[in-house]
Image 1 (tube, one colour):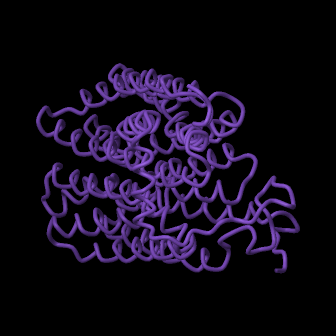
Image 2 (cartoon, one colour):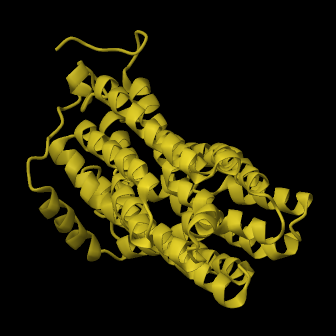
Image 3 (spheres, one colour):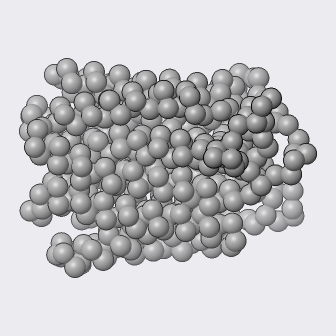
Length: 419
């Protein structure tokens, strides 16, 4: 087969660029309900509990789809899975323009959007990293994780400005259009395997053995991997700590931070800009986390990340929602918004092997989104009952500190080594 290169070099950077853009856009879609929560309530008269439930459904399905998406990528191909997912996200976003009842919000932004976006997330990153890279896996995974989390945050000010100027409908239309435009990009520029363009994984020797392509039933593959993982204590420790990761990021801050700031008199654009600042620091922190994961014990990195995150959330009530206080929170919290992803995948690769790791990482990521969905719903309920979000943020901070110590209980090295 004729070799295909990227400006005369290995084609892997082109693959990274395509996946980075797709992850960025999908993250923007997942951030949309947080921006439109208040506008939907004002337009339709829906309660915070109703809009929070729709957001929680989307987050839950976003995570639950992961392991099945990873198995589908092995069986049907990355490109085909991504194209179907992008089409689902585009069509569901467009269809929501015509909704008039809460159940339609749940179907479009919860059910269909959640499943579609669940195919373009950490499991996609893990599959690409293990398939296209022999070296520098941590760095590339950190870059992908940064695109996912940073995309969630940097889209906030732009989407917020559109919502403030023209209402929620233009926001939805923009999201649907971006998803549709990504389909030809993926179709034209994303090969399935390095061998399809006459290459080996980046950093591998020229005589690197060919890939073994999966032909089994993806549902059976996903559940078989879960059965094997469930017998490992380390799987449950990774799933438990990643549950806390989702609880303290997407579900809490990603869903409710704008509404929290509005409770204290900030405009929607100012609140969105605060999250964008977090996104800038997250891009630095998560990419650096990938670099560090290639060099240091990932368990100790997780301890540091969860500990810093917990202390940041505990500090939030004392920030007094002043410019200086919120800026300090944005910096320290943003640095490890989702820096936990590269070390978590690295541990999964060590413990379960490169072939099974993406699917098991999908199940671990499902626990992440269960945690996020729990926080999205419970924080909304707490706000409705008590009139304040702060209790939910402080509790999440202490839970993150607990996850820091749980990370140190994970065993080191591959599963074949003695404990």
